[in-house]
Structure formats: C-alpha cells, structure tokens
Length: 132
Image 1: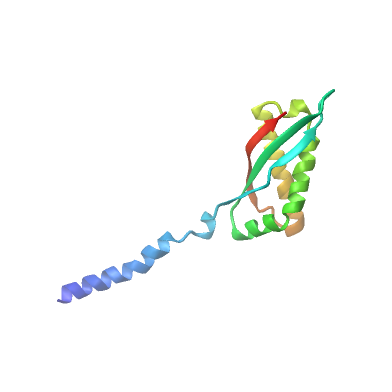
Image 2: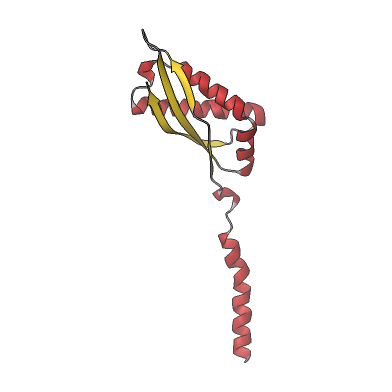
C-alpha cells in the first residue's frame, strides 16, 4: 500500500511539468499575417503592365502581431509604393522577386521601427506573384 501511495505521489508530481512542456514559450511564438492581395501597375516601356501578388508577414510575438495589424494601412501603402516603383526588368526572375521581398521586408520593418520603436517582423513572403 505504501509503494502505491509513493508511486502515485511521484507520478502526480511529474504531471505539472509535463503540462508546462506543452505550452509554447515566448521564444517559440510564430504567427503569420496574410495581407489582402496587392494590384499595382509598374514601369514598362510602351505598355501598361500589372503586378498582382499576395504577401504573408511572419511575426514572432503577440506584440508584433498587434503592431502589424494596427499599422496595416501604412504598411500596405509602403509596399504598394515599392511595387509601383519597379521596372519590368526588376520583376522578371525569381532572384529579382526575392530581392523585392527583402526590400518589402525592409520597408515594413522601417515603418514599425518608426511607429513602434521595434522592427517586429521576422520575414515576408510572396505567396503568389503574377505579372501581366
């Protein structure tokens, strides 16, 4: 009887630490924010060209999630201005699109740094990218 009691007591003391292991730590927080699709015209000699893309932003804290949502209109504006400033040659290849994603990430981080005092955003991804 004493052995059962000690076994139950031992196993019971292990339960709270097992539950705590399932909870994500603050460093483990990752969330994605999908922005509405962007449609922009871009510089192309002789013809009117359009770009349509969807962007997802990666944040690593609840505070970052709130900051991005709070400043979403300004972030969309800055990204749209960046997209519209590009020439056709700057958008045609995957490598150039990757550079554009890095530029957009820098713009987003710049806005958040100015508005919130912290860059907050970990990464930015094009989830679709169409030139017409």
